[in-house]
View 1 (cartoon, rainbow, N blue to C red):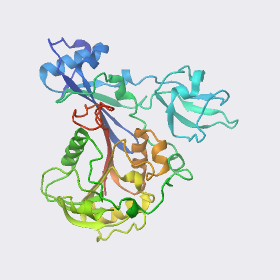
View 2: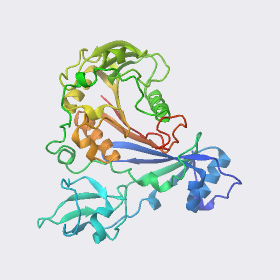
View 3: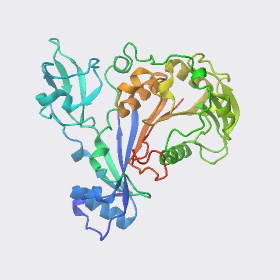
View 4: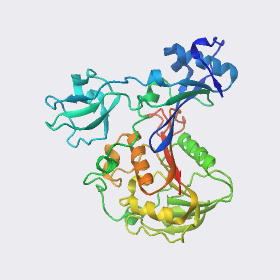
Length: 387
C-alpha cells in the first residue's frame, strides 16, 4: 500500500467511478474499521481527497491519508451547561452520544448533527459535555481505493465521520447501556408463538447480504464446525464446506436452510442452556438477532462454553428489526452505539481480540422491493472476537 502526501500528487486525467473509503483506528478494547462507499463526485469537495482519488485511480491501488484534519472539532475543553431552555430527552445517560444541536447555542452549534458525548452531571445539576469529535485525539488513518459497484447518489464524504468513534467504551458501560428496563420488550409474549408461522423472507437487501457473506468468508475456514445462533432459512455463508448446526425458533425455517446439518428449535429467552458439549464449535455466528436476547450475558457465557479455545464469535446486524421484540435499549441507541453495546457484552464475557467493522454507502439493488423509498443498501455492522 502506498503512503502518499496528497499535496504532492499530480492529478491523473480521470477518476474511478466509485471509491471505498476506510477509516482505521483503535480504542481501549478493540480495533475498528469503518467503511463508506462514495461516488467519484464526492471527492470534488476537498482537494486532498481529489488528488488522492486521482492517484488511486491511476495506480489502481489504495492510498493512505492522515485522518486528523477531518476529525474536527478537537482539543476543546469540557463544557458545563444548564438545562434551562433545552428540550432534552427524559432519560439522559452519561456516556451516551447526542447530536450537538440538542444542546442549542450553549455549544455554539445550534443546527449541528455531529455527535457529542454526555460525560455526566456537575454537583449543581449542570450537564458536562465533551464537545469534540468522538475520534478527536485518536490515532486514525484513512484508506482510499477504487471500488466495484456504485454508491448511493449524493452521498457526501462527511457521512464517513458521523458515527465512527461512538462505539468507544464509556466510562461506566453498565450504567450507560443497561439502566433499569434496558432489557424489557414491548411484546414479552412467547417467542415460539411469535415465530409460529415461518417467515421465509430476506430481512436484508441483496447488497447487504453480499457484504455479510463476504465478511463471513474472510473469517471462516473450510471444514470449520459452525453454530448459526438464532438461525433461519439462510445462514449467509460463503460456499466453502462447513459443518453447520442451527438453533432457531421455527422448524420449517430451519428445514428450509440447506446449509444446516443439525437443527434445534429452542427459545433462548426461555432456556439459555445449549444442547452441545464444551468446545464443540470452531465458530459461532449471530446474524441480525442479538437485539432480541433478553439475557445476553447468560447466552454469551454458553457460547463461550461451546466454543473451542481460540474459537471465533461474530455478531452482525443492520438497522432493521422487529421493534416489539427487541430489547428497549436497542432502539434508544445510535447504530454505532449499538456496536459499543455489543463490544461491551463480548468483552465482559471474557472474549479477546475484539474487532468492529461497519460498511455503508452501497446502492440498493434496483429490483429490491424497498428501492423506491430507500436508495441505499442496508448498512452492515459487525463485531467479532475469540475465546
